Each structure stands twice: as structure tokens, then as C-alpha cells.
Figure 1 (cartoon, chains in turn red, purple):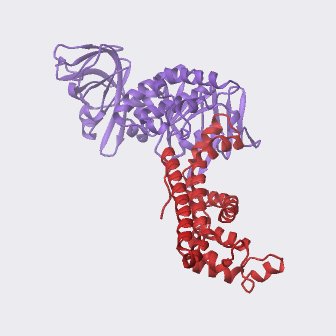
Figure 2 (cartoon, rainbow over the protein chains, first blue to last red):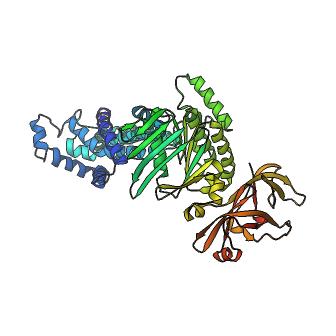
Figure 3 (cartoon, chains in turn yellow, cyan):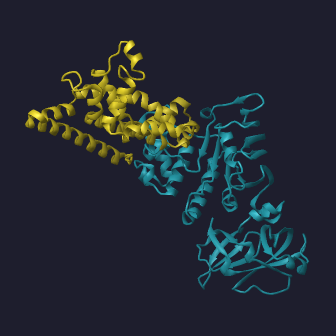
Length: 215
Length: 357
């Protein structure tokens, strides 16, 4: 359950976040700082507050929620709601890393490639993308790790109904009350997975000489 | 031949407006203060920007014609461009950087060609390393090798020695001058450093306020600066000759065209360049005083006198070579310095630098 939701969330984050990160890195426009602040907001919000915010905005009685419900999409207490919550909390981890990766790309590299015989698309494919991929992968791994560990926002926004919206962290909390061993076992799995993910990210970034963007 | 006609560029407050041409096998250095638009001119030649007006052509191909709205894409121009920061691709090993422009050959063939080029620059040992592990001088050579791998029709160099430390610069300068000569294509080099230009180029064009103020060989500019700006730009004077070691550890240089100078530097016998700062040179009337081992005395004729505020630059011809001395305006009056006057240029052996050519 956790896996499915987090992967779905990751997919959305990467598809939407990559162009956003590129624009933030390469263009200076009015409101750029506001955009960056908005994107980083989930980093500082307590997860429960984030969940509440989502409820207010997207819940059936919420700001846009009414339209969403009319469109036949049920979010609150549904699996889709979990995915939305995960997207909200995990996207800053990807966008910031991707933005740093795009910022590290020297514009003269693309120009050099053009003077050396590449058309603009070819230069982008041969120079820009390979140089940026390690950063994007790192960002993706961090976002995925965050999504897997998400708890507070999910609980508030999507509830904790087993099979529908109960992600692993929520299951741990529920088990904690009744089956301590079970809770510990599930926790161990989650911790192990997260540690492995972080270790992998560190190894890749050290190997490439790519720094992690940490707060 | 590279031809730049009436090219006009506007960048912020600056406007560049010039024409120049460079023959195959010749290197022209564009010298002027930083921010004067010299890099923008290089970028226009490479096709990375389009000037507001003018034509740029290479041989029979017209690359840019602002009036006709023509601008050939950079990838079709074959300009070997050495960027100021070298722009080496960090994610590729050195040999792949050099092989980047090679087309139509298999991987093994491309690697072989790249290694051949790297060997010319003494870098084949670094072929599989990433650029960031190389020193500044090594990276500059890789950038040069990469530009040459393109088999370019024009070489463009943006401040090629600026990023190097002083010690590397002298050595790199000699090698670069030789590489440019061997390339056999027109080379356009921009720099704010007159000495770099004098070391690398056959001719220098001085740019001030967006226009070419004077164009000529380094010697011509030193002895006959067309404007105070040009005179001020000129650093050390450079004479050429042949060196032989002296018993006391110094070097004696027989100048091409006659005359002998002594230097306290140690140098190997053979062709050398002798340099001395103009402010180390004093001028005396031509009295018959023999040269001592501490001072050099060279007979010269005044070619120009340029006032530079509190000092004056005197351009001199000495046995077919150019010298420049910096003196006080008072000395000008005292010695009656004017073009045509015969004088003796005097400077210390310890102020004389000798460098192998």
C-alpha cells in the first residue's frame, strides 16, 4: 500500500517538478522568490497541519473541494487522497535537488557543444541531460523516502482505513496500541528501507561529486 | 580568411563597431579593457549571438549578414572556440571531451584519434580522468585539443591565458603560440593583456570605446602608439636575439639586428626573447660610453613621443627592433626628444628578463 501510493506520488512529482525546477534554476522572473517559498512550505509545516490544510483546500467542504467532488473525484478518506498528501509533503525534496542540479549546469557547456557541431536538441541530449540526471535521481530518492515515511498529513487528510488509506506508518501507530511486536516489526522494515535508500543516495552522490541539498 | 565587416554590437552601455580581417595562418589579437565587448565579438563570429549589423564571412562562406537576416547556426560554422573558462564537460572523461566533435567513426577509432591529439599536448596519461582532476594549464590544453579535433576553419580564443597562474602562463604561452601557428587557420584572440597578445599574435588591434584605435605588430604599437591609450596599454618591451651563457652566471644576448644586452637571468643558449619594463629605461644623449656589465646601452632613434599625464612614453627604433621608454616630461625637454633624434637607451642588467623562444 505504501509502495503503490508513494510510487504514484513520485511519478507525479517528477513529471511536474522537473520543468518547474528547470524554470526556477534558469529564469529570473517576478515572483520567483514567492514561488520558491510556496514550494518549500511543506518542509516547515508540521505534517498534521499540512493535512489539515489539504482538508481545508481539497476536502468536500473545502475551497476547491466542492468542484473536485462535483467532478466525481473522492479524495478524503480515499487512496487518491493519500497520494495527494504524499505529493504535497515530498515534492520540495525533489524540486530543490532538481533545481540545484539545473543550476550547476554551466550555460557555456551547451554553447561549447553547439560550436563543436551539435544542434540545440542534440546538445541538450548529449550534455545537459547526462550532467543533470544524478541530481534528479538523488532528488527522486529523497522524495520517495519522505513519501514512505509520511504520516501526519495522511492521517488527517485520508484517515487510516486498512486497505484503502492505511500506509505503513499509520499501521505502525495502530498496531502500537494492540500488537507491539507487530508494530516494531513493521517499523524495523521501514527504518531498514529508509536507511538503505539514504545510503544508496550518499554513495551515488559521493561517486559523482554531487552534493546533497540539505536544510 | 576571416572577414568581419562593419559589425555593430550593442551591449548595455557599450557599443562595438568595427571591421577586421584575419588571413589564414595569421593570428590577430584584439586587445582592450574588460567589458568592452570583445567576447561578444567572438560569440558573433561563432554564431552564438547575432550582431545588429554587419557581415561575417569565412573564405567564400557568408556566416552572418545582418541586413539580409542571415545567421548560419553555430553547429555549421566549424569554429574552434576556446572559452575563457574552457567549458569542458565535467561528466565526460578527458578523451571523450576531445572526441566530442568527431563524427562518423566508431568508438575505437574516435578514442584513437583523441589519444593522438592528447599526445600532441602531452596529456595522454590523463585520457580517462575527469576534467576536474586536471590543473588549469592541463584543462586549457584539453580545451584546445577539443577545438582542434573539430578541424576548424577558424580558431577563436577568449583570454586563453587569463585563468592560469603566473608560473604556468609563461610555459603555456610558448606552447599556445606554437599550436596557433601550426593550426594553419585564421585565429582571433581577445584579451585585456597586451603582453599575452604580443606573445601569441602576429598582429594586435587595440579597441577603445568600441572602435579599433590602432592595428599593427607588437613592435609597431610599442614604438609608434597612435594614441595615449595605446601607449598606456603596452607593458614590457620585447626584443629578440640569441643567447649565450656568461662566465659570471648571467646571459649575453646578441640582438637580431645588432647590439648586445646582458641579463642577470640564467638561460640556455639559443633563440630568446628579452624583455624590460619601459620605466626601467632611461635615455641619454649619444656619448661614447662603453657598456658595462651592470648596464645595457643600446643606440636608438626616437620614433614617437606620447604624453601620459605625469609621464611620457617614448617609442624607439633600435636596430630594427622596437623599444619603449617611460620618462618624465622634464626629460623630454632636457634631451630635446622628438621623432628622429638619436639617443642611447640605458637600463640595468638586473632589470632584463630573458625567456626561451
